[in-house]
Image 1 (tube, rainbow, N blue to C red):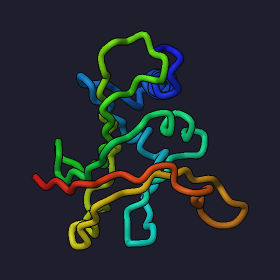
Image 2 (cartoon, one colour):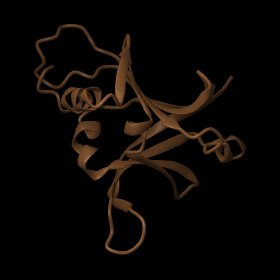
Image 3 (cartoon, rainbow, N blue to C red):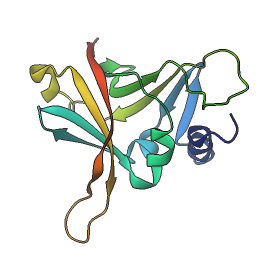
Image 4 (spheres, rainbow, N blue to C red):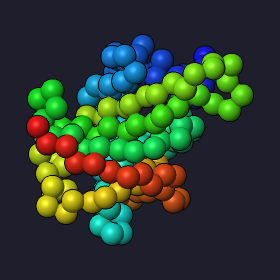
Length: 150
């Protein structure tokens, strides 16, 4: 697992004080949370984009579901889940589940309460010469989504 792109990504964030673990949860702090942006895809479906440099790590995992959690531990989150983070050919015998918690500014996700989307898309964003960063290519994942209110 040492060479797993997500493990290497997490290790760099942890060294910067931007991420921590709690059991099988990886919890991003505000510094790491700035590497993500929320947008809208056709549908309307929430679109979460990571920084382009993070795409390899985040797309190396087969994410199986996602949730928007309102008011969890006094803030809002987007949580991505996978049943098994292992890469093909891993020597680890048992599945390794993982959840990635991405912080969101409280209230920023409120609009989705009314829409009640059933899925979310994940993509990568890249800086443009003029204007804000934009989706780069196509989303790399589409996941079932739950909305969880406290």
